Amino acid sequence: MRSTFSISSARRGRAARLLCLLSVFLVAGGSAQAQKLAPPVRFRQVAPDVFVHTSYHKSAGTTAPVAANGLIVRTSTGALLVDTGWNSDQTLQILRWVADSLHQHVRMAVVTHAHEDRLGGIAALRANHIRVLGSPLTAKLALAQQLDAPTPSIQPYTLIRAGRTRLEVFFPGPGHAPDNVVVWLPRQRVLFGGSLLKDATATTLGNIADADLKQWPAAVRKVATHYPKAQVVVPGNGAPGGPELFTHTLRLLRPGSNPQTRTALNSK
Ligand SMILES: [Zn+2]
Image (cartoon, rainbow, N blue to C red; front, side, top):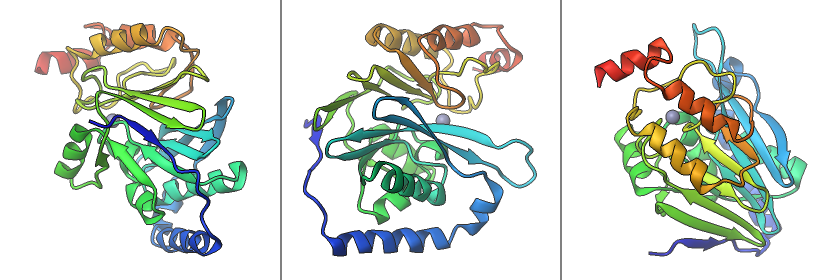
């Protein structure tokens, strides 16, 4: 099975770029409602060439919007995206930011599990001819929820190369979701834990509807063991931190650590 991808460094012609912008405009037009409900996507740099995008989901009647993080990685052959926004409009904001601020195009995207905050913007990527990769299980679970599915090319361990940049995708076992993968950037020592890891201020495990609370701790330990050199650890929600997010997540997973966990364990 092919497990290494490279990104073509061929430049697109002017006509192709215009077509791309046109499709951005067309898709953006249909989602004005989503824009009204949620704040704009935010961006922050966490390491050389590595940026976190944060998009917000606010449904009518709820108080605080739910924030979700993904990554943008600048490479010599174009940008790589880890996870979309919640929807197409936010994902188009990400593509625009990459074009305006990094002066690049997104060449490829990886989605880390089959929930809306990870792959809700696949349509916007496809409209802009961007390859979207995920695991076969993520593709299957997305289709079962009638969500757009990624191309099922990610194996339990997959290496993506783009110029001198390496990006490893690793499946440590089920945790927050049965299909959650993490992404490691060895040059920048950035680990994107996604929803497998909780931020330092989290007091609950968040959405555990599809979680495997028995196997989740082992998955966190496996990631910590696998990537001992991680300096920046990016959780699925909340502020990036360091390796202390491993121990914080394990603390939240301890039986009896909070009412939400207890309830979920009892119901298993
Ligand atoms: Zn999720």
